[in-house]
Length: 260
Image 1 (tube, rainbow, N blue to C red):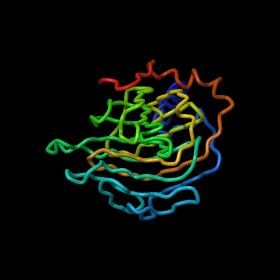
Image 2 (cartoon, rainbow, N blue to C red):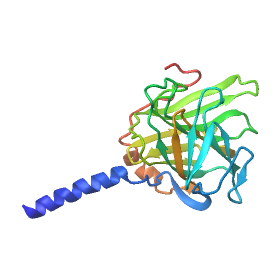
Image 3 (cartoon, helix red, strand yellow):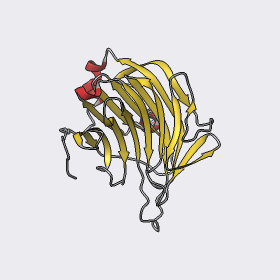
Image 4 (tube, rainbow, N blue to C red):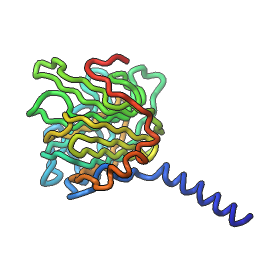
């Protein structure tokens, strides 16, 4: 009986540990570490060189450095919601970010919670090669755990607007959360704290990229850690793919000006 009790406790502990641990790579393997940003270095809208590959800018919204974190806020009249951006040349990457959603003030009707990683190449077109959203309640796009591709002309006319995946979003407020984004050629895998996973394959993802941006909602959010590795394909991906995606709901991509 004692052995059974200990075994049961071990299983419960393992499940809790798995749920709260940082996601592990599946689609890709980590190569060279291109950037490790612990937010100890101050930056502004002009840009600060953080590595031989990337410059960082706190270029939209309101930002405040707090010890080794950066906290974003927003208020009416300041323009775009907060964006932290990283300029550099890359193609296949693994991105890991640890952040917090701030709480909503019920007395402030414009407060929203949102986290997005976008990968761009503005030399090719306006828009985002890929947007990976963990969006609780921002009404700019669908709510949920999302992958999106959007291509616009210089005049902002939409050429492609494709919702690649939409999954339920499980999240907690005022707690450090880690997301992991893997992009290899035409495939993308997006994970958050072992509880959320989104996947897509699209030939339009298979292009050089030169900008990573982190977009936050209108209530306060905090960034604690941001890392970028060069990615190479995981040779075992095809054999583990079905098992890795088994908890993901089936979703068919929705192209061009989808409606909520």
